[in-house]
Amino acid sequence: MNAERQEPRPGDDPAVPAFERARTRRQMARAAGLHPDHWYAVEHSHALRPGAVIETRFWQRSIALFRGQDGTIGAVENRCAHRQVKLSLGEVAGCRLVCPYHGWQYDTAGRLVAIPHALFGQPMPRVRLAAFPVRERYGLIWLFPGDPALAEATAMPEIPEVEGARPWAAITVDFTWAAHHSMIIENVSDFTHAHLHRSYRPFTDATLIELRTEGQRVRLAYDVLVGDGRFSKHFVDRSRVRVDRMELCFEYPYQWSDTGGRIKHWCFFLPMDARTTRVFFLFYFDAIQIPLLRVPMPRWLQLPLLRAARRVMIRPLLAQDGGMVEAEQQAYERRPHAPSIELNPAVIAFQKLVVAEWRRHLEGAMPRTAAPAELA
Ligand code: FES
Ligand SMILES: [Fe+2]
Image 1 (cartoon, protein in one colour):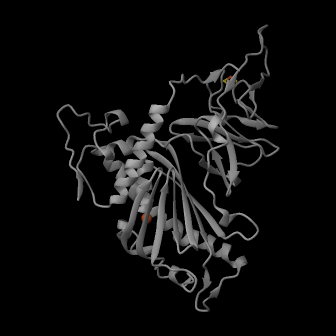
Image 2 (cartoon, protein in one colour):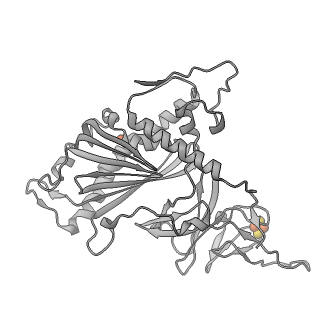
């Protein structure tokens, strides 16, 4: 048994300890951010129409995400260089982001390109807001919050099954939960919580049979009965897929699972701050059958079926997880020094990786001034 029996010491701050002051592995994991030098899913593509601007956040950093009329996406520091008003409160004109207050205009590279009022004899200020590389893939908008020079060469998840001429049926589900990302990372790969989902039975009688950390990956496998719910089990084509084993991986900073090579998912985490995480689940399937007939379901029927399943089963099931990680967050904030008992070695491996990568980030971070605007 791996118990961290860390009772408060005299003089302990009752508040949640910051990373530098954390004493236990769990406290460190709960204070760590995710390394910014990766691509992060921040929004559904369809949620950002041409001419729209929205706010997103990466680890307390507010970012204005906007789409020009030509479809190009810009992501810039969400503070006008003039009086620091959030640019996400403004609007998009053509391909420029316009501040709502005095109308200063920025392009997708964050450059101030127009001021629609008097300059009082002064030259046009040379301003360039921090701008973030963005991409669109898998129906999602991806942002690189770290060093922009690394963006191009940094790999993002490769999911060939949902691209190409005959993509698998896929659906995306997202939630914003009031919980630290490490709690969610642990939740999605730790099958000891089958009890929570006993009415849906997505995984039953799980036994951990493999666990190994390889660099930035924690790989694990369970002997487990997958998809044994009252309704779901009739839709899984067991002649084509083995449902008695599931492989999972915390492929930092993402997570995925694979059942028999035909039922898969990825999970993308957006750490908005230390107690708020947006999480995008992408599920994709190649083994859906028509119940009773037991023949493969035609492709045109798969997507409507999955959309219905998302509403009646997948969202409610994941909402159970959301309720629990939010409860865990509240409990942690009430008693951050309370003893914790962790039985699943996979959870310990996840926490170690989260802590190690955050430490690597802090050690590598150049001392930067957090200026809202840089001179061009
Ligand atoms: S605060 Fe943005 S234009 Fe003045
Ligand atoms: Fe769960």
